Length: 89
Image 1: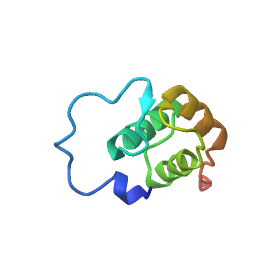
Image 2: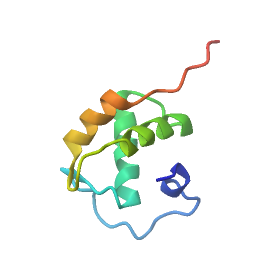
Image 3: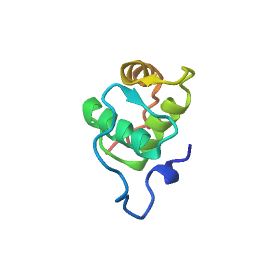
């Protein structure tokens, strides 16, 4: 899955309701996008393109089978994410 697919330029008015609290649908762009945004917030990271890509790369490396438990994916991403280097002032 490409980052550009998850953050299109148009808004998504077709999404109704909240994402599933227990599972992440790896085939639904909105679910993956919501997971990445929540992960960045919980990790205290800024919502930049580079950080989103780092989390997406870790999500894409998940080898579990559907249904994907949110807690299992979170644990995997925490271990697998490779944050981009922060430029020094």
